[in-house]
Structures are given as structure tokens and as C-alpha cells.
Image (tube, rainbow over all chains, first blue to last red; front, side, top):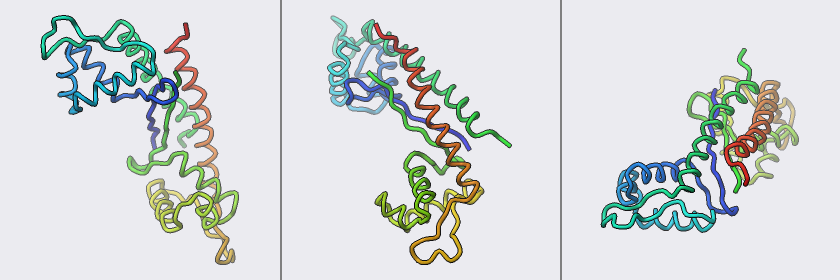
Length: 111
Length: 111
């Protein structure tokens, strides 16, 4: 018997941000390109842009920005606020994974 | 911005028990009848029995039992182990809801 969970941060009561979106932003930060990031995940570029626009609108801040002169393949980077948000989300998720196991152990003591 | 989560207890690595199943068991305990319980939730009787059988097999203990002489409409009740499991699940979920909000507040401090 074990505990599993899914968690999201919800902006404006309607736009969910979870592990899948965090992976997308991580890859943008790592690769410096939304095009390369979506190719790695298997998401369409169009969907990814649409989602990011919706997210930024609900959040009220920019998560990514085009790098001037990046050329056709490159040039999307996380903003400072985007990096901060992602770091906080990672902290939240890691802490959650720990405390869920602790809570589970308290509620379902082993014989 | 807020945190949301879904959580499950998983038996034998494959059978998930979450809030929906907990509601079904709660209603069986309250109404003393699986038939009345499924009617209230809008689940089919057949599906509910199938799910409970699968759950009991994975868990290795009985959650519900037929009451002798209950007649066609009545006669399903939680076992002692079923009641204990449900109480522990409720404790786990309530604690989880609290600590998620606390963790969220720590990770995303308000300006």
C-alpha cells in the first residue's frame, strides 16, 4: 500500500500548472529554445505557445521571452520571474512528496 | 494563485482508492445498502461490486459484507477493517489538505 498524488498550482481559478508544464519550462531554460523544448516533449509548438500565453495572462507576468537575434531555431528564454516561479514550484513539489509520505505513514501505521 | 491536489492510496501497485471510492464506502456505511449507495452516486451496481471485489483482492481484506437476512434492498455493511481503513483514509486526506496549503504558503510567499 502506498500514497500517490498529483498537484497543481492554479492561476486565476482556471489555469493549471503541474509537472508537465514545469518540464516544458525547464527544457526552455535548458535549451534556450521553445522549438527544441517541444520537440523533446512531443508537444506541438502551436499548443505550447497557446498554453504559455494563457498561463501568462492568468498569472499576470511573463514566464518566457524571445531573445533578440536568436534566429529561427533559438531565442526563447525564461524571464527572471519565470525562473523564480519554476524554482518555487520545484520546492513546493519536492516538499509535498516528502510530507505526503510522512502523513501516509502516520495515518496508516504498519503492523 | 492556489494549490490543488488529488491523492490516492494504491493497493498492490495497481488499484487506486481515492475520494470517489471513499464516498461510496461512506454511503454504504451510512445507508447499510450498496444498492442505495450506488443509486445516490449514480454508479452502476455491477460496476460498484466489480470495483469492490478488485479492491478487496488487492488489499487482502474485506471492506464490505452482506448482512444475513437483509432482504433484496438492504444488507451490505462495512466490515470492521473497512471502517478502520476508511477512518484512516479520511485522516490522511484531511491532514494532506492542511499541509499542502502550508507548504504552498512557504514556497510561494505573498509579497
